[in-house]
Image (cartoon, rainbow, N blue to C red; front, side, top):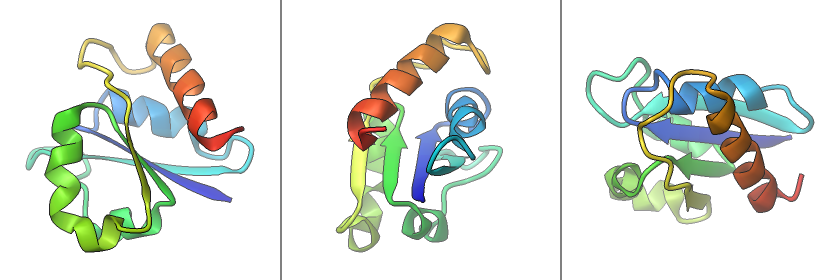
Length: 107
């Protein structure tokens, strides 16, 4: 089982879409969170520890979790460079996510 964590700002559109499409698909277990204080679910050290692979939607999300370098040291952390211009479950967003995750996890 590969544990995937998806991060965006609010955890309402991009990362939540990713969790929905990957959780339980194949060998994946997926969770999602936001990096801002008012996120639906806020990223925690526990979530970061849980994950095998962490996907950040933008570079700013990557920078925000770097304060947990001790936790991230043995993790694969990837920035997807997906701007905040998609709605929840947007078909184009789903295509981008599926392609990106497959390239990283070889699934």
